[in-house]
Length: 244
Image 1: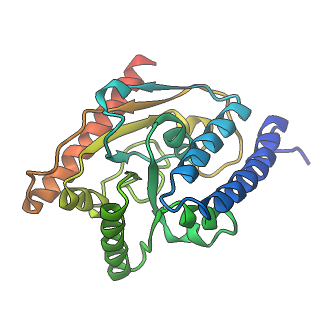
Image 2: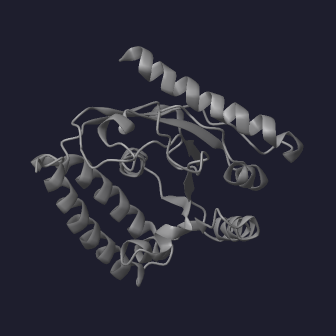
């Protein structure tokens, strides 16, 4: 029987498991001495850069000069690959946590590290629980400010097209008055597809849009705001497509 996965892809998957376990364990131990999660933030960035380097995946960041590195933001991104996560954490030099699906919370060691790092989990199958999770996230952000990455599509796109955005995380940003930054994760779906294990060595890119202030926005206009953010992400991704 012919093997459907290359040696390079198999080697990468082995390293993915090993380095994830090592960094997650290190983060859990470090969290015992630092409750704000900054050490685990450093661990996440280092883990992400390590995985991209091992995979031979070159990445670039466009638009970082638009951001104040001493501020906090809610980053709204498209989602089409498991590589989106390491690209975001490697490319954004912020104390960053994610709003993730609750299934990740129960993964041994990896999920424990996310909990220790102050990440948030949402049960997408239960609307009431999802709202309660976002309310807890708001309280946590008020006590310990940091930046947040959200994937408003809710799931990975199979065809690379940006799906309609769900409102929850963006409305939370409006309620907290935190600027929202549209970002486009470009090429990740070509390197590692949603339904597949083959890893293709191609360059990927993170494109950053202009921060959108939310302090004076009314939640009555949330639907338009959510669509405006989505269109910005689409425009950023289109610029990358036109440049390649």
